[in-house]
Image 1: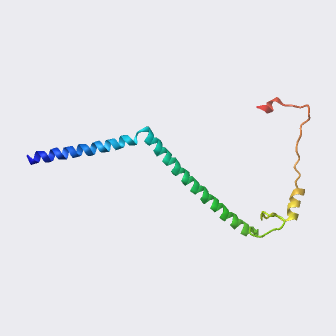
Image 2: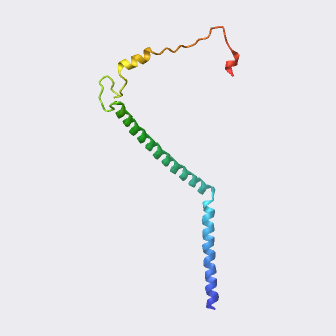
Length: 119
């Protein structure tokens, strides 16, 4: 008698447990739950992307400082002419680069038009 009662109770408990598990899984598959899961994943991906962008920005700033030190450009030097503290190339080098610019711009005659250029 006790053996039958034990197995009946064990079977009923297993049935309740299995039904509860199945209902939980079914609730996870409802459209609202799937939408909430997708939104959570999107927010998480956004946070990871933001962290990555901040890491890249920090690395860029560090590398820029290293290059400025290697080139002898001081980022923290105060230049009264340039209030934004941006250092530029020395004047003679810049003028020499502008003077050596010998690029010619080709212009076509006013009457010539090639229809194949539109394609």
